[in-house]
Image 1 (tube, one colour):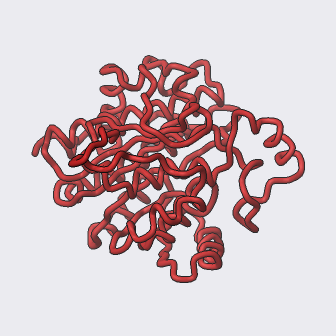
Image 2: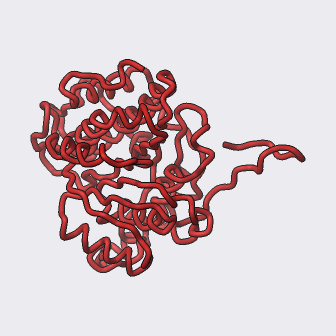
Length: 330
């Protein structure tokens, strides 16, 4: 995306500003006529992503598990963006049937952006069984979205859809154990989260490569939102209401943490920046200073760029689609 300047050259790419509110002018109108699906849009990064996309003019399909919470979040968005075009769609990332059902609804529409945001951040202390023999965190963060992507393969083949996979800075801190992705032994909450994010990040990168190989018009853009915490996020009734302890914790971490309204910039930039449609394969966006800072082109963790991890991620993707690879042939 960085381009040399000159009399006849294209303007140099400029980094977005620090939070979704500051980028209103940058993204104004870029979503007009486009439809974006945001899973888990009722809270956290998903809420601020939905807010910014709605403000850009996009129709936002809020794919959430809890309809009441989604409708409350939509009301909060409309208070800030009266012209917002929002719809609720049922989606539980912990259910293959829910992924199949959402895909069936989406096939009749033109989808321009699909943000794989829903997931478990506060992981269970003990291993909870999930789908296909994996534990619940891998199921929710990866497998449900993998089935949704597989069900929508025809859309990837026919339309310049952008799939946004949410990676994590945790992939730089803990390398996934490819022999123990099910965490049947040595389960730890942080390992469960980090491994699920490594697999999702590796899948996002592998999917972009596969799309290029197939010469399909869609792109897969992987991002990470830095260390985004609720204690540094604006208070929004029913959406983000951290207590005193979390606010204090956020302030103590402010030197290396940011709010979710700041972390969401990477997601919205990936969804709307027109230059990214022709960016190199495997484009990855993240904060300049890893845990916080201006969003820029970043380098994914070496392990998630590895052939080994991406192959395992693709195996999970295939397993989530009943052993069928929807992207096997052009």
